[in-house]
Image 1 (cartoon, rainbow, N blue to C red):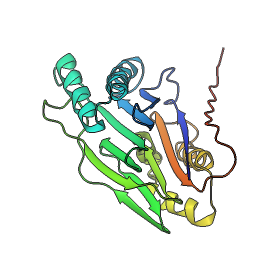
Image 2 (image 1 turned 135 degrees about the vertical axis):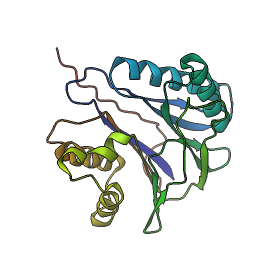
Image 3 (image 1 turned 30 degrees about the vertical axis):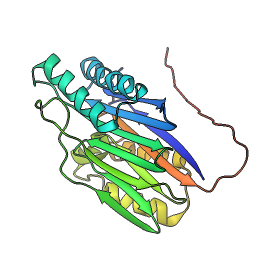
Image 4 (image 1 turned 180 degrees about the vertical axis):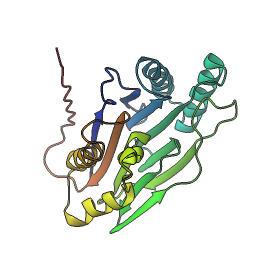
Length: 235
């Protein structure tokens, strides 16, 4: 088997900096973790918050700290620094080769969608953002690695797409239709979800949007690990 990971993200319209931050790190005991945070509001202040959270989490994961403990430590740090006045959502998706599972850690009211065996499930248990108090705990789900598994994680900009037009995006139905109509690559799926959200907002996103898609496929080809990044730059 092999795990493919893709990301598509865009800033809020007319906002030079995104309040969403995403980073990936290799796990010391084997595997890979992807960390996605969304700071409250948007722009430079939100970016500073999400970067602080992601760097805290990444640093702890690199030391071998468990994902849930890293999330709680980041929440305590944010609460202490901002005195409970600023919040930040957090998702950690870890491919853990030691356990043979994908561990999903969520401090985000937005659900996670998991598709396998032709069925798409919504992980929507109540989840509280970081920084609200000193006792914030993440919702943790562990899923066995298996071919055909697809996981979709996103920030709330996707959920709010189309709301100002009175046509909010049905994220679950959109994901199901994408998976039923074809067998998209993770990048195709992330790109399609983002394109539809931007269209619902009349090509002017009302919020920062970040979409992370993980897919487990049968292994084919060589043993090379690859990562690609595309960063548009406007002078």
